[in-house]
Length: 246
Image (tube, rainbow, N blue to C red; front, side, top):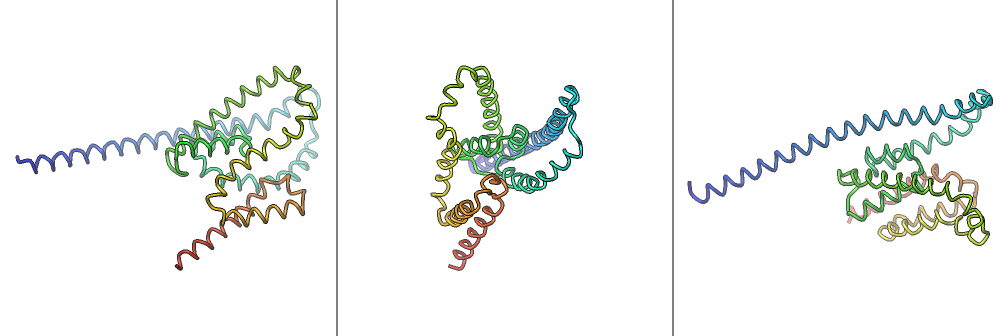
């Protein structure tokens, strides 16, 4: 056997080994995804039952069971509005977070203020792309870490609530607490706006004018994601078609 045949044999063996590794990784990832969906669905159902059942259980125990007619009337008046935003958030955030991160984020809540910024920042730090396996792992780890830190901070807050009340209620710090979330999202958003300012400019102007003219919409930011996202997609498509013609 000459040197050329040895080299070809080594190349074939390397290609076969690489293919075996890829196949094994695909099988492991498939098993991981199935277990994630099973656990996510089971825990989501348990959480849903606990969230809905807790008020009725407490009310029954305390002898203050709510009037079901009033409950359904209140639910319908609010639920119809939030149904649209819930579907929109699911369609927008799930591709960003993946299955594991998505289940964790929707179960623990506080997506806009905490989970999404944490996952996006972690993804950018490692350079992962949305829709990849790396992004799913990073999102899951970052959201789990965020949830644990949130629980720890809340526990400390409960313990220190009484001693810190004079500071928390200080009129000097009140404006700072009112602007924590806008400051957080403004700093994060600029990083993305700077990359695609030609796409972000129109949605920013339209939403700013709309919220200024109709201040009541400020409380429906989740719902307003739909039209602002549609505008951004339309602008991006316009520039794509314009560049394709060139």
